Image (cartoon, rainbow, N blue to C red):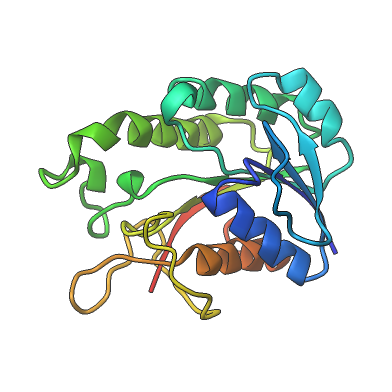
Length: 213
């Protein structure tokens, strides 16, 4: 079993990842700026923030995997990319890093354009999407000794559309996953299934991948 730290562990993606990891018997530390009233039994909750990387790195010392699930929105816009980079640099090289990004950096077709570059992409979401893409670019440019993976959820992923756990999903490589009707969706619980599957059986060393139904 792995020792996993989830940064942003009380958010939508993070809380689902914490729950899935605990259900599989992993040792899980959820890190967020405040400890929630409702907690996943079996997880350890600590207060911490990406805005104080030295303290954060000390709090999660000894883990095998660190998952960054902090969206670049609100007061964190412009703060997530530089601090994730700082955290990755601060972690021991044998710690695997996973990042939950957004759909915007996915491709619309193999070798095609990005989702964010399509006319249909909502303008107000672009700053957050571009910062998420920047995190991916930093990981790709980083040292080969650092193992990482980066997940692009489906376009319809979000707290407004939680869905249920089916235990199934499709891995689209770098192309956004859509169904027969062109819809792109995955529940929070099934995104977590994909993340834990990757932790337990790595298939994407230093790679990104998309998930959806």
